[in-house]
Structures are given as structure tokens and as C-alpha cells.
Image (cartoon, rainbow, N blue to C red; front, top):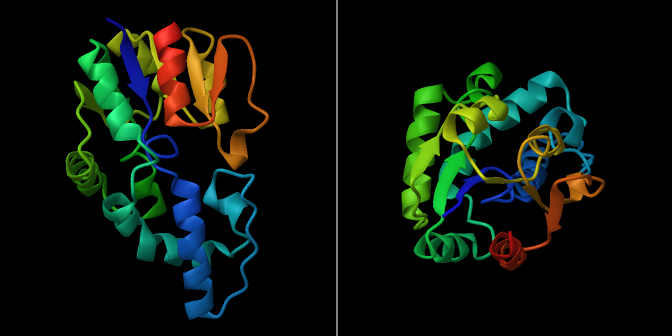
Length: 196
């Protein structure tokens, strides 16, 4: 049995595509200009808005993201398959650490909505670690065998310790290196894990 460590935003979901769709609507309704730079992961770089417009957009939309975003592809089915085959499934997310700073949702509500979203979308897991801004610390505490994420900084940092699968997104196309394997879909993630 291997303990597999899965990120949520950008891995179980496609947060950037969802936020871009919402940003288009928000810009139209607010009558503000929108340029999208989808090669970036963070909103301050993705949208060329003022800090006030960005804050207002996130305040208006982030709670909806936490409750309404659809799972990516067949992620729940693949995770069920891995769990049935004896893998330990652990979700590790930084949710609850950024939202209060952005003043969009408080940490306790973020925790609660995350758990409800996982259950609503039929994710079966052994453990959920929320507010894990430092994923290296979570890795050490959980004794994990592999990590699946989309964010370059996480992938590079964790690949120094364990194998990492990077799920392809527009903002991570240049991520590569030792101990890093790229997957373009959840089916590919499954095949890579099976070969480890």
C-alpha cells in the first residue's frame, strides 16, 4: 500500500478555468476591462485588475467556487479505484490559509465547505489535511509516498523528497525535473501510480 497525497484546487478541480469564466461575467456586469493571463496561477497576475476590483470579485465568487465547482474529469472514480487497490488517499490543501488574508471567506467556513464539497462529489478518502500552507511539513507528518499537484512551487519543493505527478495546466507547462512526472489526465495519473 502506498499513501498518495492529492492537492485539491487545480488538481481535483480546475480552479483557473472556473475563475476565468466567472471573471468574464463579473467584468461584464461591473463594466470593467478584463485581460486574462492564464499562464499564471495567482489571481493578482491572472487578471489585470486593481486590488479593489480583484478583492470585490473574489469576495463575490470564492464561496461559490468552494460549493459549486465541478470535479475534474473522472478524478473521483480514479481515486476510488486506487483506494480499492489498497492505496491510502490523503487530500492536503492550503485552503483556509489564503481566504482569510484575501478577506473572502473565513477559515472555518472554508474547512466546512471543503468537506461538504468532497462528500457531495463522492470523494472517498482516508484523511483530509486542511490549512496546509507548508506542504513539506504535511509530507513529513503524514509519511507520504507520492504527491499529485499542479502548482510549480509545490511540485519542485516536494520532488526533492518524494515522486511528484504534476497535472498539466496552462500555468505549469514548463514544470519538469528529477522525480517529476507529467500527467495530462486522471487516467494518466492512475497509470503512473500503478507503475510506481
